[in-house]
Structure formats: C-alpha cells, structure tokens
Length: 399
Picture 1 (spheres, rainbow, N blue to C red):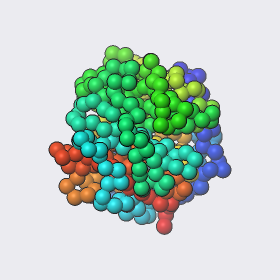
Picture 2 (picture 1 turned 120 degrees about the vertical axis):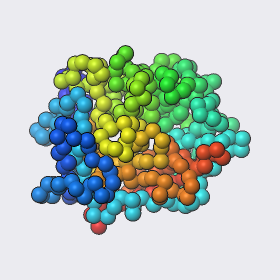
Picture 3 (picture 1 turned 135 degrees about the vertical axis):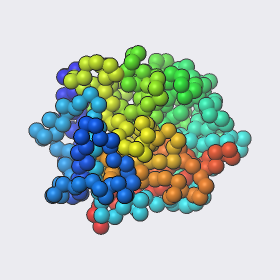
Picture 4 (picture 1 turned 90 degrees about the horizontal axis):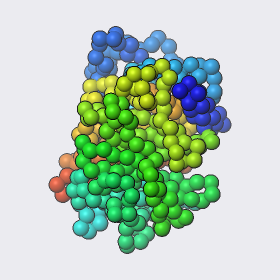
C-alpha cells in the first residue's frame, strides 16, 4: 500500500510540469472546526463568520517538494475544510453562451446527456448519450465542432447502443475520452440498471471517432467489496492522460446511497488500481480511499459527477453536490489528490441557468485559455438539451 501511494504521488506531481504553471496568489481561508462541529455551509452569510488566516498564501505550485510528499499522509476520511477565494466571483465569469441549446435532442429522443468531449487536430468531438427514461436504454451519437459552440452530427446513425455493450446494465453513459499517442481513440463509460443496482466502468476503442468501436469484455473498474465506501457503484468516470500513464476520477456509491469521489491509476488505461491510503486498514477504507468527501450542508452527503481538467491553474474539479442535481461545486488541487474547495460554492445553480430549467451531467474541457462546460439541461417532463458555459482566462485570476 505504501508503494502504491508513493508511486501515485510521483506520477501525479510529475504530470504537473513547472513550465506549464502560472503562479497566482489566492486567499486561503481555513474553517478549522472542532471534531464535533458541523462543517460550514456554502452560503455567503455563514462564510462571513469563518475566521480567515492572517496572511495571504500563494497557490502551491505542482513542483515535487518535501511539502507535497507529506500531503500524501491522508486520514481515512479526509475532510478538506480549507477554501480559496478570488477577487472576482467565479459566478460572474462563468457565463452561459446562449439561452438556446448548442446541441438539441434528436427527434424521438427525450433526454440528451453531454457525454464525452475530445479535442484533437483542431476539432472538438462530442460523444453524446440519448435516452427516453431514467433509468432507460441508451444510444450514443457523434458530433463535431470547430469552436465548441457550433456542433454538427457527423453521421445519421448512432455509434453504438446498449446492445453493443458487454457489461451488464440497462444503459451505458459515455462520459470520458482521449486519443492515445499512437492515434487510438478511447472512450470510458459506466453502466447502470437502477439507482440502487450495481454499476461498473468500461472501456471501448476505435481507430477513428466514427468507429467501428470495440468494447473491452471486462470492466476497467468495479465496485469495492462488501462494506467498502464504493461497494455498490463506480460511475461518472473521468480519465486524463498524465506522466507515464492515466488517472481516473470517479464517483463511488455505497448501499446507504452516499457518494464520494475516488481516484485510480493505470499505466496502460486498461488495468486500474484504486488510490489507497496505507494508514487506513478497516472498513469502509480497507481496500481503497476516496479523495474527496461531502463536508458542507449544500453537498448533503453526496459528491458526484467529477469532471477534472489539468491546466496552469492546477487540477481543476467540477462536481455535483447533493442528490437532486442543479448544484455544481469547484475545487482545485496542485497534486491531483488533495483538493481545496472554492469558498463561493456552488458556482452553478438554477439561478444562473435558463429560467425554469434544471441541469445534470456536464462535460468539462479546456482549450486555448478557455474553460468549457457542456451541460444537460431542460424541463424534465419535456426533455433536455445541451447548453454551454464558458470561462475565459486563468481560473484564479485576481482581476
């Protein structure tokens, strides 16, 4: 276990090249509650009562240092109560591109999920999921765009349906993808039958985004054993290329319907090993450990749908707080393991969405100094489409 932890830290810190990092100063606020205190909520009123540190702490650069090594000594249930702030609220910079969807659902389909987005050879490629009920059978279509705003369906027929997926499940949501150094296209998905039924993460490959797609017969990641923190489902997968391999962020759910965010590592993208803190040896953390757990009232015991990109700001995470959707939180990390929440969370709610709409799963990506967030949103009984949010410039910019 200690060998895995040290290898993972070296792997993640090596991925953060000093040349790619722009050092930015942000204020770090520490809540420092006692063991019996409830963590603070994300409301502005209650945050005003938090006693900030006396000095401004610069953002830690992701260079391998003795300090970074020490941060790997995590407890069994890490509850990161530190927060960061910015001069201009993120909510004022994360802007809806249009009140009209950038991708509309297909005729005869009710719900459209943003799926996975890959940027390759100057084009954006979207692999979007359609279904008519939840939970229900899924189909996946392929779209392309020159700018992330204007999308065109590449072919009339779907790339694949749930019938093509070898893993057990009623549906499969494609949620992450990449292109390997040798030109192979890779998609990652999770299967589902119902909210209380087991779910796994799978992998598919193709020589071209239009296919044909070949599905691995075995899961890439499975739930933990009985009593583990992720014993029921592993889902909402997000895979990134990094130094000497790949990292996977995912949501793990137990039988009490509690969700946490986990991390796994792979040298080849096929065989994965979950992050494990060697200091934890009893259930629910005997086999592996989450890297982020619910800590705030608005998160309501549920952290899901992790979307991570690596930029000059560090490892930037968007996540769902609470079980009902329509609330997105932001956190950043300089080692890919220890994340610090944004003090103004949630950064996205129904207040900054089209009036009357709810929103769900998003596809988060970064290109040319711009953050893109494609989200599924709409009127539930009628259906959902894909809308686009953008944030230009450095996330932690102070002016």
